[in-house]
Length: 492
Ligand code: FB9
Image (cartoon, rainbow, N blue to C red; front, side, top):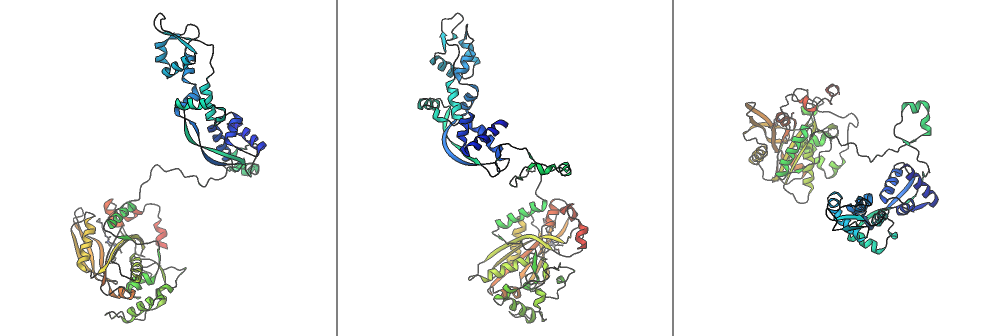
């Protein structure tokens, strides 16, 4: 390979540019070997350039490849016939590969003769001293893509003997590259301390980084339990005809996380004990929300009510709503999607779901972290009520294999009525709270511009709890694994 590459470089140096087929003829080397040498030169950087051109050409079949490497069947058979006293035909047929074709071709070429009446049975003798294996030579010409040295008869014979076939071969237009050189300096792949210490690195050429190189495929690794269970919940929602909401926004404005949900600005959940407030940028602009007067309607319903509500009768501040936080629930995303839904010229009944991270500045314990994944489903349609909510929650948990459900009245600032969801856990032998739910308040939906007759039912649960139950994990720390340094979380 070494000298083939330097011969190729020398040839390019003399001819500026050439084709890989030309190099074949010049070096009387197979095209595949030329391509191999060109690729290894290309690995050295921009010494040369090689433009591929796919052309249809004769190429060797596997049998042709075998003959080009080991000789034609007739030449192989001839070589197996001892000069002088020859060999029994039966033996040759058994011991020589492709003897049948080899024998008939060698006979046809008058390289051998058969004495059928020889004592001990038909015996084969050489007719000539030596033979030139034209077939093999032709095939090597084909492999070297120098077809013009073959006659049409020869091509036809090779084709008839299925030693060659029409194929698509990539040939290369080769030319000097910006870093053309006649000597291939070994490219260093490591910059060692010793090179730095001795300064020799300045005289060396280093292999260019191949940023396209794919990393080694790890032959192990599993989906994190949370991601496995998330996939199951996703599948259930999709089966029930729900669309996934875009949840790629951990930082949210207090407006969408609280105000749009009719959660009053003095609600305990809105202070730093429960919510992570951003210091930089501490606040955002709510221009879009002001656009169609939506923000003003939210201000109004909080301050003085409306839509049949008395509101909270306090002085609602836009500055409070502008405060940036880490979202405390994906219900903030539901609010955004419902507002977009209300902007549609014609209301479309819709089913949405979300599964993503939410952040709560809560005291850590075995089942609570400062972040968890909230799973939420909502259905917006005409005249939905609590029965529809109970029904769809039953269907949802039924798909999880949970049958025994109970609903307990509860309170959320943004839903009325609200219910906690319980299921009887055979293993634990007790009723377990498995989620929360409710009917979104008109004070939330009507300022958005949704029709009076449209109601929205929704429910939510965490992803961590079912995952811990499914994998028998008792402490949530084991779910997030060693990589997360809890101390860092607490101090933040
Ligand atoms: O996930 C919860 N529990 C749960 C869920 C599934 C489960 O296993 C399945 C059987 C296989 C086991 C347990 N909970 C909700 C209940 C409790 O764990 C609760 O203590 C903790 N809750 C989280 C919030 O903590 C502050 C879980 C989280 C939660 C709570 C409420 C919602 C979402 C997540 C909601 C909502 C909602 C309500 C109305 C409208 C829209 C959304």
